[in-house]
Image (cartoon, rainbow, N blue to C red; front, side, top):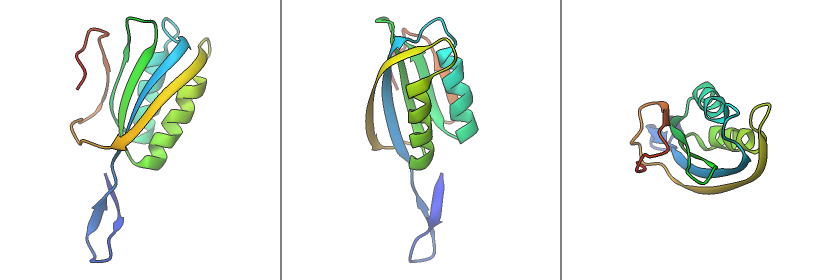
Length: 110
């Protein structure tokens, strides 16, 4: 993703990363597909997966404002979900992802 021009006249890259764990009644309610649709609508890349402890884990990269919107969506979830907590960590993006996907709960991370 590119931001506005820098003072020298070239584009600037503004890619941030959000790693979030969502706890509550978030499995079996379409939460992962809700996250995929929202992330794709926002132009984000990364992944979402069910975790063995019953939580949902999400890693997303893109424009910080779009990540803020995704984080807000994680706090509400789809109809049928009951979100009790969202643990979020923000950092610089890695640029490793090409699209947003659903991963198996047995994945080893990125």
